[in-house]
Length: 272
Image 1 (tube, one colour):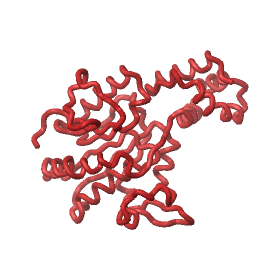
Image 2 (image 1 turned 60 degrees about the horizontal axis):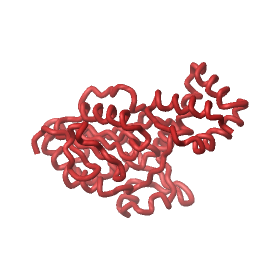
Image 3 (image 1 turned 180 degrees about the horizontal axis):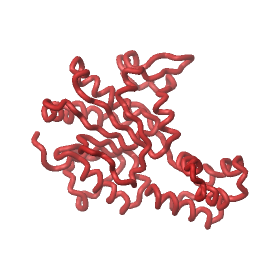
Image 4 (image 1 turned 90 degrees about the vertical axis):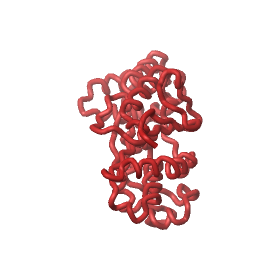
């Protein structure tokens, strides 16, 4: 069983490096790490952390992050966001960027890929025959390499796709075995998956038009969340949109976003 000292050491590491607050989650942390520590031959959590801190390859760091980041997502989750994106955001963007035909859309908590693939399907639907003449690639990032590997594979069970519209299922997924479906190459090339820690400086050369940052800030404390939201605000185009999870809140007194509706925010400026 993990000691309090070991728990605090790992919690401090995750908070400092990734902004993730595990301060009240000792039981969960122990449950997720215990078998891994035993299987790896370490006799304590301290021994594992000592090995991690001197591991130049970064392999143990990756393992720790993969084990401690929760990833629960599914197709059509909070679908109202995608309807709003198609009905309001994309017509505005199409008009705004009609000369460049360059859209910059970032999904900052890609998990196992359902959300970025959903965004890509909505884009395909919206642009229709014009799709090929627009740069609609979605940037999808996550701190966990394990989920990004799954996302890249694009392999999902039939049950996983049950809520998707039939035409999307037919168009964007191929049956590859008993009850399993794979994302088509056509859809896969619309999403660019990259590992990224939201606590790092944002590396974007151009500002984003829309950012989906849904159901990730629940893992951050107040200050970390504020710092992240300020970085998000700064890297959005004037008039750009931010989507957060429907159960999440944002303190508008401290961040200058306009509220469009609960969980949808907009940076001021930019013509409609």
